[in-house]
Amino acid sequence: MLLATMLKGMIGGDQNATLDRLLDECDARTQGLEGLLQAPEGAAPRHTFTSTAPPELLSMATVSAARRLRVAPTMIRMMGALQKSTRYYDARFKPDGREARPELFVELEEAARRGGAAAVRYVSLPDDSIFRGKGVPHRNVIVYAVAMRKEALDTAPSFEAFQEVARAYLRLLLLGNRLTELLRARGHAAYPGTALGGLTDYTRLAELAGLGAIGYHGLLITPEDGVMLRLNTIYTSIENLPTVEAEEVGWIRDFCAMCGKCVRSCPVDAIHPRPVAQDSGRVQCIDAGVCLDYFAQNFGCAVCADVCPFTQVGYDRIRRRFKGNPTAPRYTLTTEPS
Image (cartoon, rainbow, N blue to C red; front, side):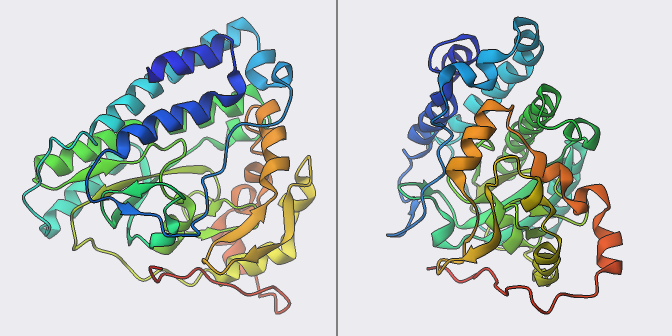
C-alpha cells in the first residue's frame, strides 16, 4: 500500500498530498500498540507537506521522465524500508529487559557508524515533543544522524539536491531497521521512526540530546556536519540510556542573530529575522506555509541549509572566531516533560 501510494505520486495523480498520505498510512500502523505515550493537550501538530501550489507547478509534475526513472530506485527502496519500519509496531515482539549492559551501547554505536551514521545520542522524551494526536511506545529515545554531500546541496534548489536528500532518508530508514533488529536480538524493545516525518519533533530531540543546536533556519547545526544532515529516532524500552548533558549552544543562536544569511537568502522570505521561543520550549523560525509552497515547487529547496556558514565555513572555525553577540535574543529549550 505504501509503495502504491508513492508510485501514484511519482507517476501522476494527486502528487501534492502524496507524502502526507504516506505518513498517515504509517501513523495508522504505529498507533495500534497499547500503552502509547500520548501527546498532551495543546501539543503542536506535525507540519503538513501538502502545499497550496497548483498541481501542475509541483516539482514532480515538471520533471522529465528520465529524471523520474533516475530517482525511482531510491524511492522504491525507501518505501520498502519504510514499510518494514512500520511492521515493528505489530505488538508481536515481547522484550525481556529494561536495563542494557554498557557493551550494548558500544556495539550499537559501532553498528550505527558502519551503517553510515554521523552521530548517535540519547534523550528522555519530553511529552510536548510528541505531535498532536500521536503517541510513542517509549520515552527513551535514540537519536541518530546521517550526513549529506555538500557538493550536491550546493546546487540547491535542484533535482540533484533532491536526490541527495532522498538518499539520506533511505540511509536513515535502512539504519533504523538494522539497529532495531540489533536491539531486539538483545532482548530490548525497539521501534524505529519513519524518518520522513515522524511522531515526534526530531530536531528538538536532537538538540536536547546534545547533537547540536537549532539555528534560525529551523535546522539542526552540529559540530560534525554543520547543517548537512538528516535525523531519525528509535524508541526503546532501555531505561539506562547513556544520556549526556547537552553542551551550551546559546552561542550558536547568538551567531545566527548576527549572521542572518539564511534570512536574506531565502527565495520567499520564509525565515523570521527573530525566531519566537514558545511556552512549550519549541522555537518557531519559519513561516511554514510560505516555505512549503516554494519547497513543493523547487525539489525541496534546501537553500538555507546550503548557504549556512556552518555548512560553508565549518563549525570549528566559526566557534574559534566568534566573539559573542550581546544584542542577540536569548532563549533555551526546556527539558522538562510537560
